[in-house]
Image (cartoon, rainbow over all chains, first blue to last red; front, side, top):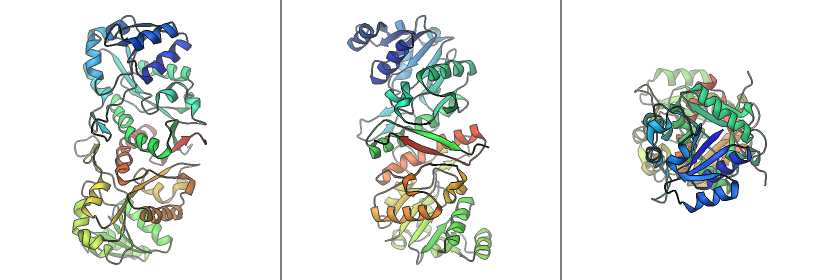
Length: 217
Length: 217
């Protein structure tokens, strides 16, 4: 597939690199066409680098690996609804603001970044996933031993199927992927990050995840 | 121990009943001394029933099993800081409001019910725990198969020890209890409820929990 990855941080780099390993054509998009991190990534991994808009053109899937606090603005810069129409948007972001010294979610409770993106891009198909683990675990779930859970949510079944296939290619077993339903479930996926931060601080490592355990019946 | 349980709903009933099974002296507290649910519980389980204030008097541990949306007011009615001084307050509540038809947390993001209680009761020792599972699983963790995690947080180590002993008596293995640190970690415990609700709706049952999985190293 042709996939655009918006964002040049550790999460964007991890996902873009893994997608290249899996044989996809990947363009890493940044605000500036000359972003040095995107250019370095493209040179090292035989990918492409460009603006946010460049990364969207021709892509079947666009990964939102930008900060959740600014993602809607990024997608407007990428061309908005017209540019994203018919595409799958895989939103892996969290709306985290540490500027006060404590964790603050800038979107929370009765809304989520994923919902904001779906409202801003009504002809795109937004799927929330991967935001509940760190960038390394996203694309190498085997870094956490045994079974552990990944969530997907979204209003479009075919888009969730596309994302689920990517998750399986990343190494997530089908039985560990839970479909939470429509895009409003992204609220819980994003609000979980507060517990994730506490667990990271308590355990001293980001190489962890949660497994949903229920009776087999 | 002498334990007061504030709240007569399914969670209060489950905890009070389990504490009686374990041999504790339990008073179930309600707004009205004549609350019929509290009286029926007391008659069936050889416990006591009374007002919120009655349940606090003489108790070493006070369980907050009231709705998180009104818990601070309940503890003021119970006598406030003077009445709770030196006692352990085990806060199992969630600040859930369904009145709009969707889940709304009335305290969220940069505050939590547990922190509000600790601020209102500076001489009490508030511990957040158990709110991440339903009432049955709280006191019978074996209803969910295998290993799964319970969190505690609070600013007072001895109070967390007291609560951890109660959790172990309920059936939580020591290795499945994670100390998240100070009471601000209650934010993550409470915000997790949004994901819990999505999982409950997706799975059709409340008999589940999450297990934190990390590398043994």
